Image (cartoon, rainbow, N blue to C red; front, side, top):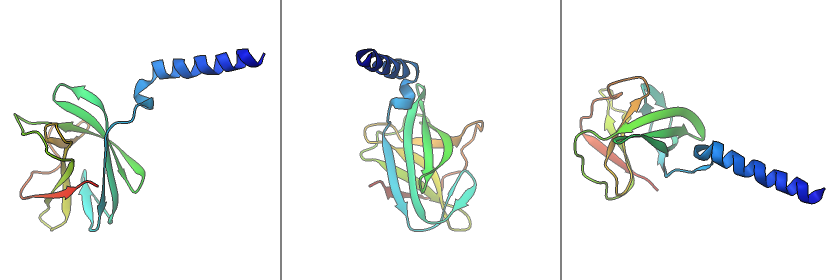
Length: 139
């Protein structure tokens, strides 16, 4: 009886891994501590912890990233490389300044991969147009 129970538990765990490998996989994560207010997808947030986790490939030039602020999930953003961008030398989260002066999340760079612009799902244009780029290096 005990052996059958363990075999059932192992079989269920293997089946869950086969049916939902993305749920079990942990993608690369960038975490930055923001000391000033910042904007993501048109919403302004108080200073806090911003994290981006690569979820999976979406197309040959795009990946899906989960975004969290202070541990709360905001959802999924598409990260797309435009043209032929250089490969990132380090992990970075890239911001621009808005007309009102606060930081606006625009791009993500994972070491060894192209720099990718962030888009909201369902929108064909980026949430912001880059001006001067400010970098917040991930820890």
